[in-house]
Image (cartoon, rainbow, N blue to C red; front, side, top):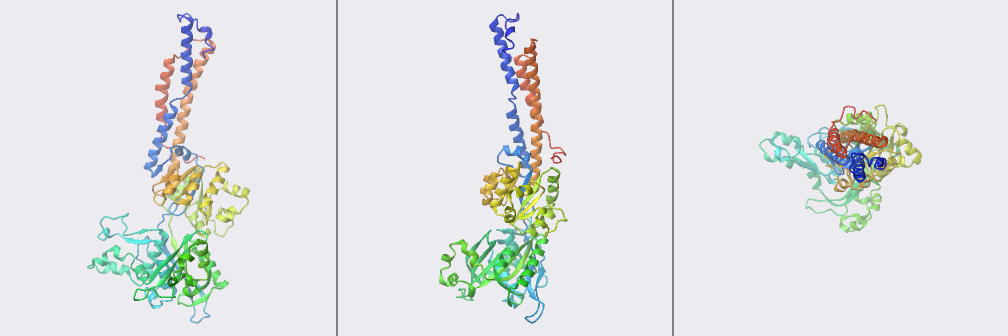
Length: 588
């Protein structure tokens, strides 16, 4: 502009040629200022900040400001199942035991299901077809063994809240009983209370004159204490994802409260498919031990599949008597610590087991999750569910929440979108990428490392994935993802530090709310950027054409600066306050 205006430096309106040069230099500088929307960074920062405040009101804590904008571009949500799609309120609803329908040894052995009543973490309830006294009348039967395994092979605690004995204030959402530890293990403790010899519910409701019996903390684990007092748990073989089981070494305690020599036992719980492979015997409900024949294995496998088809998590129970254990693992030899130094030996120790039974645990879907997944479909966002559950269980839950259609049966082929982790990654890479491009998916029996591999593959095909996680092992995937989402309730500090945002309520619906807010912010940013650029282009064209055509300047330098200051910034800021429209999640 300044060069184009050189012939006009000597116009009569200027006292000198230098004054004209200075004037048009000011015009050129003002035009340069007008061409750059200097208010844009401030408006974007303000818009993102307002978005984080609105997200906080919807239970989303944003840790990294740029992630608010990225949320609006999310194309895939990779989510955990437990606690995110489901409520994580585990309740044991089924106990399966092996029973003989004949009085002689040739009677047919069947896997018999017993329904469990009660809900949440209340110890009140019963088990159909099983009397409470059975664990005492048949001390070597599978009912007694199941009670002992669920009590001892467990690190959770069932806690009674005393402050609601008279229906006053509560510690947690008005519930009489809460837990510490893993919800799955807590559900097993509740089953012991319903299966054990002490009728807690009767004592709690009938004798109103006894403060001890009305005290929730004193009755929360009465049956568990009854079984735990008879054993000394002296070693633990921690759970790992390879063998998918956890076990404890226990020594019976006699009446003098001393351990009994040579009678140590190994109690095991874990994924039934994995556990069954390491069993060579099975115990019937009446205490009889039989060989685990191929026919019996097949029957147990069918029972496991049936439990999974009903969207129930299945936990297998097994044991190993001291006579089958390596003598070095006996407590009296004091060598078990040396034997347990290497976790790679745990699978060998947990071999030649006796199968006891199975527990079916229900984790109901959260309210509103199905509606949120339907919103994702309308918005063009695909959902990938990642879980450690069995394939049949994962598919059943996926159908419950709307990830899959109801007409998908667990036995259908993998083209329907359900894969085990190792099964998926064993496919050719080109086939993996083709699968990731189409529809919703379920990855079951997944390892933490699988999450990071999925994120990298999704990003390689141009997807913008959001990944949820709560454990320490999830941190690499959270950092790798375009949007890392940590759980606020169950999440570890490591996961929260690695994530871009934290869900206060661990709810999948909250992620969809955050995506809606992110799309609103993205749309508002597009609106005010278009507005600012349009205004600036108009100013630039008017000044530039005037200079080229030799016309008088339409805007003085002060006018251009005033336009940028007064007529660009405030309207653009106002556009950042637009609420989300009903169409915001209806576009792809």
